[in-house]
Each structure stands twice: as structure tokens, then as C-alpha cells.
Image (cartoon, rainbow, N blue to C red; front, side, top):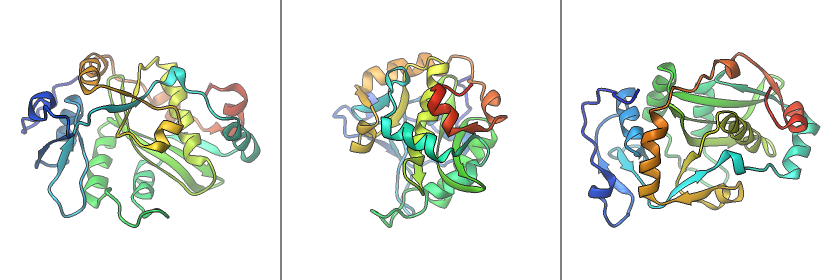
Length: 241
């Protein structure tokens, strides 16, 4: 389903930004239907609190191919050693609020209260996901993103212990492998994502492949969110089930 009845007409990124600067337009809101329509057009919001909503479609686009992902030996060792609990869609709002907290390397965050409210509503509508990593009852890491059809779009991750965000990322890769997703969107290129195995697509190639992917039947997350997984068992079996 890609008809989200958005009241805004987002421009074609290739026409609005022929030089590939990335910024496509400003304004609008963060209602679920607006977010869904924007993602279906290849756009995502990125702006600072108090500023107009800015919608981006970068050139090139950072993506990761789940089938090509290989976890590091050190990650697998930590997963076996600590045996964290990993859940899916159990604590979306906790995850996004944790992602919004200041980091050791930066006090500012782009995840404003408006972003939290918008994506939490998107999750309630069935178009967002979260992966949580727990140490007993404490949430120590995780990530969240958007899901449309078989399109999977990563947004942000956080970590309060060594490698736990990478454990959530590995879990997402296994889900992508199980559903044979051609790519998971990572949006903007950075060294951390490249170290995890991310690569890039030209904006044109990304937009062309996007339309086919989001028109596929919506991914069924129920089989995952009804379960609790062991990081140790995932590391040994290298699969969720």
C-alpha cells in the first residue's frame, strides 16, 4: 500500500535537486501519513529542534545488503559471553527516546520531541519497528526504523554497553536475510555504517528500486515481536529461529 493520502505534494528529488546537494524541500508536518508518503518518495526528515522540517534525499544513498553482512568475531564473542535478551517491537518509545539522549561525542540531538511523537504514532499505525537489547530488565541498546512493504529504513541506534547496538543491528540483518530484502536503507554515509558493511547506491538507482520494494506485501513482524531471543543462541546458530 503506497497511497497514504498526504496533503503535501513532495517534489521529485531528481528534479528538485539536480546537483545532488540532498536537501529537497522544507515544511509540512510529521503526521504518519506525511512520513509514509515522504519515505515512499525517497525522502526522510532531518533538522534541528526549532527549525523548519527539512526533507532529504542524499546523493549517494547509504544502504546495506543483509545477505552480504558478516558479524565480526568480537561481536559474536560478546553475544555468547553476556547472553543479552533481544526483543522486537517491545519498547519502541523507550528506544527512540534513548536514541534522542545526548551522546559522549555530541550534546545536541536531531531527534526532537516532535520526531518522537511522529514516529511513535507511525509505530502505532504499524509502519515502524524497534529492536531492543536487555540486560535483565534494563534496556541497554537498540535501534528503530520505518517499514513499508518490504522496504526497511534504519533511523537511529543507541548503546549503553559494549557492542549492544551492533547486536540489534545484527538482528536486523538476520530479519533482512530471512525476508530476502535487497537492501536496508541507512540514509547518510558515515564511517560507523561503512565499518558495519554498508555501501552506497546512486540516488537514481535507489529511487528506482524503492518503488518495487514498497509495493510488495507488508512484512509480518508478529512472529518476531511475540518472541524473546537469546544473544548467545543467535551467535551460535546465526539465525533467530
